[in-house]
Image 1 (cartoon, one colour):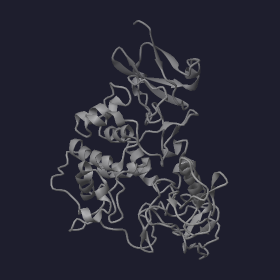
Image 2 (cartoon, rainbow, N blue to C red; image 1 turned 120 degrees about the horizontal axis):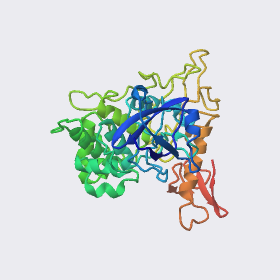
Image 3 (tube, rainbow, N blue to C red; image 1 turned 135 degrees about the vertical axis):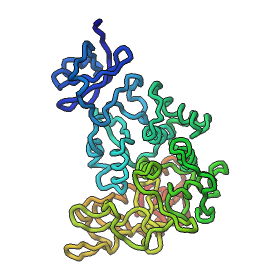
Image 4 (cartoon, helix red, strand yellow; image 1 turned 45 degrees about the vertical axis):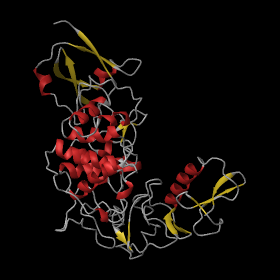
Length: 431
């Protein structure tokens, strides 16, 4: 047999791995240990392998979960949206941002469910690891990748993003005009279209006649007419949740929110239940333990508010610009007030120090500024996002003021609704 050499990109190597190698059109599994690989690494971080005869033991070598051959995909790390190949992840705890971004996140269970179903890819973190980026907006190609990977519809013969864009067009999931939007964040109105068309094309679901009362989607009229019926159908199918508070059709969707809807699409998690009148069941008033226990403090056992709960008549949502829970929609924070410790009975109030659970962004003191109440970490997020937004304003003038969302408003710095002021040539956080 003629000796052949192939070159593959650097991979994460445990003590014993198996690498799939394509040689003369056939796939063979070769077991390698760390010593084998260390001698093969080149100056550019690639691995050059000599492919010879593969004996019977190779066929029995296990292929680690999420470790797949990607010879047909040239991956150079230049596109942050391109899934990183050869990930070799055993659980979501292997993502490099698990402790900093995923652990305690409201959607941790959703991320885990889709990961265990084999439907998640991470992206390079720049340090040789793989991160998930739960709160980053998802691009059109990334959304299609998650959906098509789960449905085994990816075209592995093509590179990124054609491997997901082309089959999506062929299946009728997206129009060909969207191919230019592959690496830009997908809007929620277009996401609804992708969901409904995927259910039809991949899941063979009949969506004929499925709809949802438009009056219960407060901002449906803000969606382009092309997508309104898709949004109503997605609600009617139980793929989307909530009513009355709006859908924000022009906003982007986070990677975690996408995990939630894909779990519903493929049945990894139950879809939203409907009443007989096709009205989505709203969550009951108040704070309660979720079925998966994801909102229960691992240290204190305290039960915390979660996205979608209704507290004092206001639905808890996450502000898409700052990422702060309880600031979205009509929220003004204060969602943790009255949360009690099952051990001491002490409750959270303004001025309380955050419990040791590090739930969501719950750190520091619980502080009131104006009519809003948030944790110190959340105030820092509000400040950072606001300053970034305001610094893009051309030619601001002395005395300009903005509200908590960094939207220009009227008043003076001492007013409860004013949080930013342009003073002495720069924007300042005045609360």
